[in-house]
Image (tube, rainbow, N blue to C red; front, top):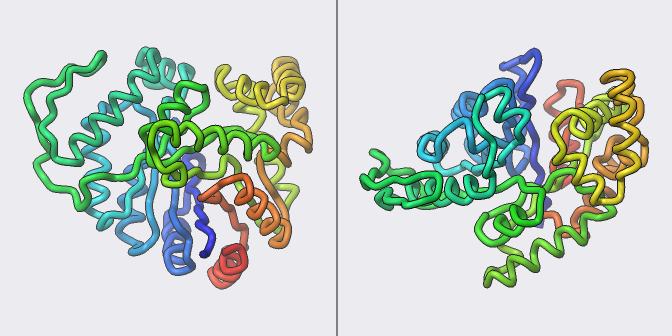
Amino acid sequence: MARKLTIGVNWQGKFDFKALLDRAKVADEAGIHSIWVAEAWGRDAFTLLALLAEHTSKVQLATSIVNIYSRTPAALAQHFGTLDDFSNGRMIIGLGTSGPQVIEHFHGIKFNPPLTRMKETVEIINMLIAGTPLNFPGKLFKLSRGFTLRFEPPRKHIPIYIASLNAKSVEFTAQKADGWLPVMIPLSALKKAVGDFRAIAKQAGRDPGAVAVKAPGAVTVTTNPTRARAAHAANVAFYAARMGTFYAEQLTRMGFGDAVAKIKEAWASGGSKAGTDAVSEKLLGELGYIGGVDGAIERLRAQEEAGIDLHSVEIDSGGSAADFEKTVAKLL
């Protein structure tokens, strides 16, 4: 069976919409499993997904991720139900809590309690997509008028993938979600993390193989590894030093506490460049791959051995559709 490869769409900075759509069309024909659109505090994900749905026909489309605070569960169900209708049943729902930095200081919404909100959000979305009257006596959401969507999505259930970090949220993901979006798990710890996750699913009475796991890091095929490595290091440094405590704590749990401390110290004293420079090659290599096709294939095999179902890839083919397709074929 061919590997399931995914590609992502950047959420920030300058954007070439024509190039984005051209790449999506090529990915659609080349056998890419899914295109994942991030949001954070840049462009919204749903507008881009509507464009991608119009210009593709086979590839699945997903959010990677949207937070569960800035839109109500019902609004999320409207978005995803509409896009599933528009794409003829190709949507994947990717949800996460984000963190207090973004939720409280960009959206202005109180962050806690994240797990309760995630549980209720998932249940409400599932109810509305299934056509179940919305009577929901939750802790956060108390809904009693029996609303249903005034249209029928093509599926009664849209797969929900959850980005989760701590033990309780990972447990909920294994018990209730269709897929897991693990974050900042080094390759050396990945097999155990996936094994533990699938064990929870099995304990919940589920087929542990029925819950998909997406790779936490990207496999980047490029002829310019220096530039790609710099971008990767900047991203790792930002999440370790500036995005609250969740990501730093995750890497510390995974055995990289000293590396995180050095990044934080460097950032605090010298800013983003110093923080980026402090990211070790070992940590970079554990969190992703950057290089040629042969090395990428080895990394994909290692991820498969660790239990990964969906692999995030980035392909720098210089804008050539033919080169992109050739690279995808080799990776598949």
